[in-house]
Amino acid sequence: MRPIVAPFPAARLRRTRQSGAIRALVQENHLSAADLIWPIFLRDGEGVEEPISSMPGVVRYSVDRAVEAAKRAHDLGIPVICLFPYTDPALKTVDCTEAWNPENLSNRATRAIKAAVPGIAVMTDVALDPYNINGHDGFVDNGEIVNDRTVEALVKQALSQAEAGADIIGPSDMMDNRIGAIRAALEGAGHKDTMLMSYSAKYASAFYGPFRDAVGASGALKGDKKTYQMNPANSDEALRLVERDLQEGADMVMVKPGMPYLDICTRVKTTFGVPTFAYQVSGEYAMIKAAAQNGWIDGEKAMIESLMAFKRAGCDGILTYFAPEVAALTAKGV
Ligand code: PBG
Image (cartoon, rainbow, N blue to C red):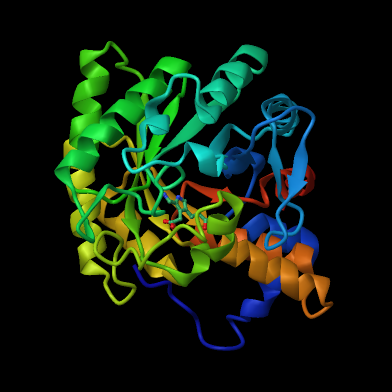
């Protein structure tokens, strides 16, 4: 549909921009706390909030502090909190068994948050990289990232998360067939309501750098992730991945990173009409924070503008490290 524009002066398109009240009246998209998923980092200990230097304002929380963070998020109207553990290097192995230890950091935090703040949904991450001695999301065999054996491990990891009480499981590993295998295992174990948000279109991106620092995977990673994460030059392939994941039982899909891939968000949403999310990743957050700290941009305005872009592109929600900051602002309405 093409809007009809009468010739000047019948149409003066500036008329509907003349005041704040009128601009609010004709605003097409809105951003609110309900659109946000807040990713947080976990570490061992008690009473700890450890800053991450490449992500100003972001910390690693010990479980007790993560519970307090979840309470704050819930009070701000944020519906989902997403957990990423920083794993003690001593627990990283070739076989990654810590990934499905019922007592691992992520599972302990899930149980503690669900017990203290039952109203917030907990999302967890399925991938082996925090537990893998070589930093990859899958098992490495003779330099090759092996698919099928990795999927068996991911199923065990996902089951341990569902058992701990995770509401949404987020496979971020990009192995083939993991959604179908996890969905079947969840059904088999009676977790029929556990949701899967698939990182369907996840690109091999330079914007993940600060995250890898945050989870302690930077030093460990050998090589790159190009045999499983997508080529940034591709777009049709994203649709194939989304379709495949939906057929395998994904409830929601994700595009990652966010702002450089807004075209993909729009194609996914318009093609499939399913709940579509974007991950505004660590590097995107770090760029905005760094420029703001230098006084080069207005950090608050850039934050809102960057998040509104996802709504305009058709996303139902956004995973963002800005979540508490933006939720506090949007309480006033933006
Ligand atoms: C890995 C994973 C990554 C992110 C989320 N899960 C990094 C990677 O693929 O190397 C990145 C998130 C961010 O940069 O904020 N399973």
